[in-house]
Structures are given as C-alpha cells and as structure tokens.
Image (cartoon, rainbow, N blue to C red; front, side, top):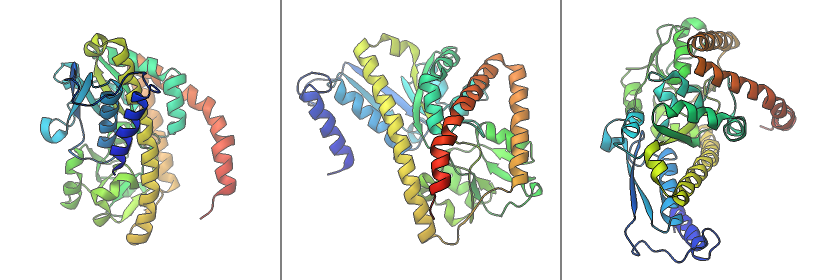
Length: 363
C-alpha cells in the first residue's frame, strides 16, 4: 500500500471517529463538492517533493472537509505559464497557486525576502520569524496590494550553491559565467560578473547539457539528482544564497474571504501541514541523496567557494540591500525585521544547534 493511500486512510479514520472534525463517515461518492477550486503550480506534472506537497494539501482539504471542498491541480505542462502564477491567481483565472515568492521581484521587490535571502536565516529561524516574529503580518501587507494571500508553502532547507562545469577558484572565474540563479542571489553574483538567467525548471537539464548555461543552482541532493545534473557538471558547490528557501501557497483574496469559516480554517491548516511536511521530507531526501552521490557518482567533486569569493558575495549583498532599502520603504521594513530577528535568534542557534554540532560532528 502506498504512503499516499495510508495517509488518506489515516485522515479518513480520524474524521470518521470524531478525533479530527467530529463528523461522520466520508466517501467521495457521498456528494459532489460544493467548492471546486483550481490551483496552478510552477512545477511540471509529477514533479517530486514540490508537487507532492501540493497533492498532500489538496488531499487533506478534501478529506477534512468531508468532500465539501476539492482542489484540482494544473501543472506548468497544462497552463504553460510557470512564472505567471501570481498574475493568474490575482486575476482570478486560478483560485490558488504554488510557486516561490522571489520569482515576483520584477513586479514587486518586497515579495522577494519571503522566500529567502543570501546569508540570511536558516529554516527554523525563518519559520519562527514567520509565525511568531511578525513575518506573516508583513507578508500579508505586501500581498494585499496584489489581491492575494500568501502562506508558507514548503521549505527546502539550506540549498546547495550549484553545479559548475569548471572549478571556481578565483573571482575571475565568475566573470562572463552564464548561470541560472534566481532571486536576490542572481543580482549578487551579477555584480561579480556572472551573466544571470532564469530558466523554467523543466528546461534546466537541456540548457546545461547544450551549453546554453555554464552553471546552475537548483535545490540540493533531494531534487538535483533526479534532474541529472551530476551527469553534466562535475563540481557541486555548497550554499550561501538560499539558507531557507520557502515556497508559497497563494490564494485569491476574494475567493478565500468568501469561504465559510470552517473551510478557511481547513485550508489554512492543510497548507501549514503540507509546508512543514515538505521541509522534513526535503531534509530526508537530501541526506539520502548525498549518500547516493558519494556512492554512485564518485567523480562529483563537492566544493566550498573560496573565502575571497564569499567575502565579495557578502559585500555585494550588503550593497544591494542598502540600495533597495533606500528606494523602497516596505522592502527596508522587511529586511530590518529579518535582520533584527536573526540577530536575536542566532544567539540561540549558536549555543544550541551550532555548539552541539561543532563538538559532536562525526565523518
């Protein structure tokens, strides 16, 4: 029996016994759903982990609502607009979406920090900031101007720095390098001479294989091996740019507000569960994937960027944050909030996780 089937049976059992909602038995044949929503995702059909989180959320909504609400998912293969999710949800073409907030920086730079920022918070710090440090309130304010609610949609954890055809030893090696790297990190490396491009997930392998790009970052071992990048680019660098990449669920504001309160709560809980479950799965799959690289692809060389390059990246990052903050008060408010929260929470991170790992790491 598949894990997905077990999950559905478990939630159904909780519903039927009254432990979850106190309602009676539910079978799909009981009645047609009163609310049928459509969700557009950036990811292609069958995309692992990211797409699975969306499927899990939709399953939970259907079961917990006793079939009153159903969410139908369209992948990028169908709607053909991987980077058009915000506009489609805003305009009501779709009721919901699943994507990443930093894809909208060209429309609204203030959306960008809700995914992650270079040299920023790690995932536990960022989740704490979202739910208890004012992050959700700031995100609601930003997306209100777009007629959309945004919710955390699943975290990858600390992402790897990317796959490179050639080893990066000095800053000169970055000059003229063609690389797929989105968000604020793309602007950081652009200041160091990298030619940055953003390519839809389904086109990444072909672009790297054909030499359209020289390097790319995607996620980490959890997903990169499934994409096959290890067959093309032998140098795999550790991360600096996305320490806590949070995807997002977007919901059309008017449609959400029109739902009965119980369905609003069910949808919210389903999104929260699917998001954190994706974080746990991403961590697991990356651990498994790294072991696989070491065993099955010994030719892959894992590297860390040299200290002078990291220093140059940090300098460029600080300069860009200052530039954007001077132009956009809302962006500044978000960055000030993140900086203050990271300063406070990082003290705990250092004396808890960091101190423990530093003294207990084993090869």
